[in-house]
Amino acid sequence: MLYPEGMRPGGGYVAPKGVAWIWIDYEEWKRAWDEERKKTGFFADPTIIITAFTEDNYVGLLPVVLKWEELKPYALGGKKTVTIEPNIKRVKGRPIKIQEGSSSGPGDVPVLVDEYEKNKRVTLGLVYFDPSIGEGYGSLYMGYHYYKKVGISLAFAFMSGEDWEICFDVFRVGSEQPGSAATVANSANPEGHISIVVTYRFEHWRYEDPVSGEVYDEEYDMWIKNFYPNTMSDETGECVEIHDWTLKYWGYGKGFSEPTYREYDFQVDGHDFAVDLLWFAELLIEIGEMVAEASTWAGFVFLFVNLDAYVEVTYAFGYDLEYVIPENVYVLIRKGRHEFEGELHNALYWKAYRP
Image 1 (cartoon, rainbow, N blue to C red):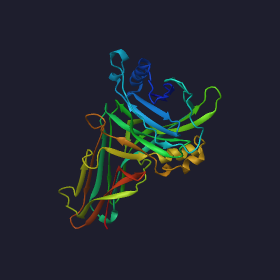
Image 2 (image 1 turned 180 degrees about the vertical axis):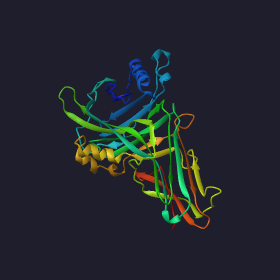
Image 3 (image 1 turned 135 degrees about the horizontal axis):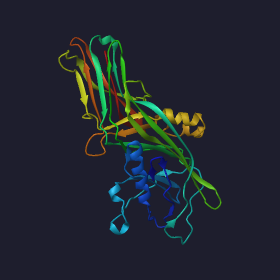
């Protein structure tokens, strides 16, 4: 269960026939978030993360994002049915066995072994202008619409699976603070950034037998816990790696009376965009919070955080990108994308250059 400080265990359950009832103390949960909003201005939708182990040696993780108005007594309709299909093959670790004749009910509760947080300035958007173009410029404006929630992904791995996975829109967090920034790239200053300070969070969970203490699996989780809109600026931040530059415009510039190329408010390529996570994962290994072998698991070098700017009826972030290019200059304008598990994910990175 997502609390302001991080995740808390909501209980452990046995499901011998594949079905379990999970009961939630939602009053304490809601009270914690109400107090957080009063103190800091941060707020979030209630999120539950369900981890399921099977006897045939699979494990799965399912985030369930709710609304506060859904949390009410069972007798008044406070119930929700979800289905989790464990699909991560456990290549090592103790097999899970359910005693014959057991019924649905309390099981082993996961233990939080360690946690770590770090603030970092990260790049949300980047604009590059090839100095050989000469006159002209590339400009980028970004703003956060306060009181709006941003969808944030979760990167996780199980020791038994040796594979990094990412779930999207797991956490939906908002702020009462506004924020915006603008940057310009030109021949004298070829690269402009828009960045923001965020809090990265890491949690290490252990699944163990409460009687014998034998460990049958461990889990690593990483995500962006908070963001601070009033820190948005044109400072350089940590950048996500770009694996593909998609061509958006090719041809001569349109002069100074109109933009040669323009994008605004996620009208192109959807409303998700990537920011960096790999630096945090590497730091965790360096300081001993994660085992070194985690860097060898599939997907590690491609780790990133996906931000969804549209999880409610309006956008949480907006942007305006323009390139102004002289009429006598032929240019290519490309947009960056980050790869994870063979899929390309949008990044708000652009570059204009002469071929």
